Length: 529
Image 1 (cartoon, rainbow, N blue to C red):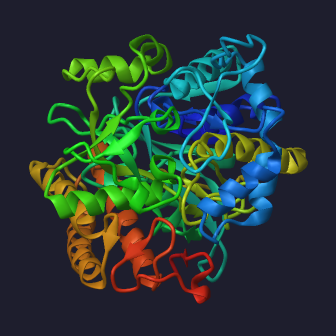
Image 2: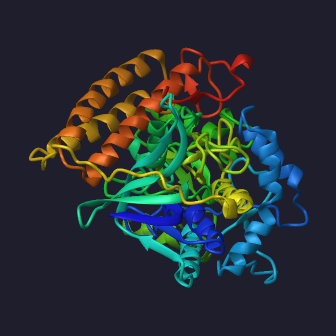
């Protein structure tokens, strides 16, 4: 079946939903999301949104903090306009119904948090459930719009492309999408296709990301021929709850922002050895420091101590974290929290211009799936939701200028052809390959890398990719198979990017090239020739 729409938005996080609200003023909008509509990385964002809203803060300070954190790879012009466009985007969220936590002493002002790498309190939050509050408000807003359709349990397989006589991609026409419940593939034809699929944390064995974060948008864009940038810069969140029964539960950056102190199991502090900001150092510094201390001591975790605050403060400021830790027998008012690093955020992604446009016409990307130049070699805490908001707005502004002149392409699109594919009777192949990819990435392409480790990872990924390719075309498409194909593609892109960068910078640290080198002060660009 072929469905026609003006806008095909793949993903239902903050980027996709905020763009959908605006795009609905122009034409029909179709959102496809592979689980429930609220299941996204946005929904799990605890910390908040960085924005200059306090009179004692300034754009210059926020810009400077971002540039310092980005280790020489931020695009300064991007940093400047994202930071300066933040206040109207925050006001827009408030108008759409987002309820940020207000100051107890100044009820007309917001309670602003501070996080690692920031020299000022500028994080707007909704307790420690900011992402959930944003998703709630945006979904309620979208539900009021008659020309926005959301298809849950639908996963995009591949983008549909128009090519020229040489075989080069010139235009995106939409996507083939699997209806998971009905086990049917549909053709979605669109004027504009927007990737807002989030991150790819599930490429790694240990991650703070939900199960949906399999890098689908990056993999699809790469297969289509779009440029991919800076995939070597994987942010490992330094403070993930370490407990055998906890499925990678994130302990927000804001805990350190409120004075949480990192300690060894012995009770000794250690961050003073690594950075002047100590426990408030940027994430890359903290993650590498914890990784080093764990390897030196042989311990499996370190501690995050916030016990100097009283119970009432902790229950009010961090209700979700307080209750979740209590489930595992940890009372954060009296017990330090056992933590370890986990894969959290990809600073690279589909390369886009200042308006969210990819290197393929009529294909845009917003949010974590994209690489805008804002984060450089390391993302400053709470700049990600801000980036998604600013770029979805900019993509809309770009599209507005051409919308009336752009016709829905009438080029015939062949329906999905399953060929001679049959039902698989050996799903263990998918499970085993999934586990091997994630373990290889964790063991060899983690916080600290080396040429030998990367070579080992690449050999294993190449073998698995060959096996998946044969399996993919012989058996009927399933959600698990699509995701396996995507994480394998993304894993390979990460390894290739790591091998191209012969230095250590920001989040990328290799023992073979421990210094930062001037000739690598540039983006790593990969595309399928």
